[in-house]
Image (cartoon, rainbow, N blue to C red; front, side, top):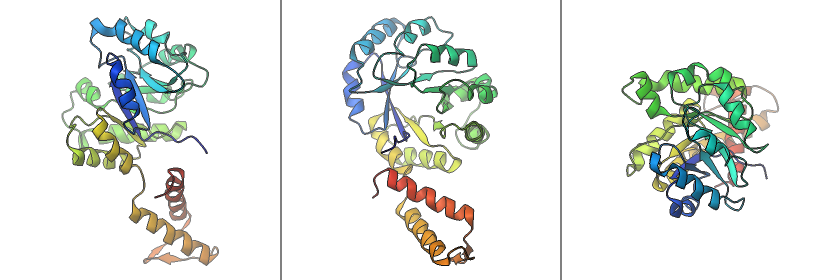
Length: 273
């Protein structure tokens, strides 16, 4: 069976090793051990050591290293080739040179996920997408708002989200990952944010608490209504044998069939209903 691209990425603080296993058991498609924002400066060294001692191919995780401009970046690079590192997030990615350096210090098949969190990173997205082993972008929406002085999560960020989707498609990357929802106990807010991301073409979302994982996963799977529509489209197209056909008063052409095929393919990949 082909490897599935994650829909949900759950952060766990690097300085809380007792939470690593709990995060893996939370149902997220991928877990990110965070050595950057979640770890205070005084705990950077001990967090890195704790992660190094725990890493194993038996429980692969991604790691978010500290930024390339930080004093901890070089030490974090030493972890990137460790068995059990399933991917590396580069925070505040702005320069392709930093991605190349990260690739040199990572395993040959380890994907790199640049975090777009600054105006410069967004401006350089086309170049960053060409970096070695870049798999997909991650939109660090909160830091991005701070950097640009933007107040608001909705239409205020619409242009930037759409551009990341466009650049990803042109570069042949996986659909990007949307940023976190800070409301931990508001499942409806998480669901609404995830559905917005999916409508815009994102393929995944960051989670900061295990309670956010289930609604995120659910929102990136086609609904029962979408599945029913897709099956009706495919049945009509097969019966028409290439002739023009309409379903529910709407013409079924090649793009419509392609969308129906994509829906059914995603359902099959996720094991059906």
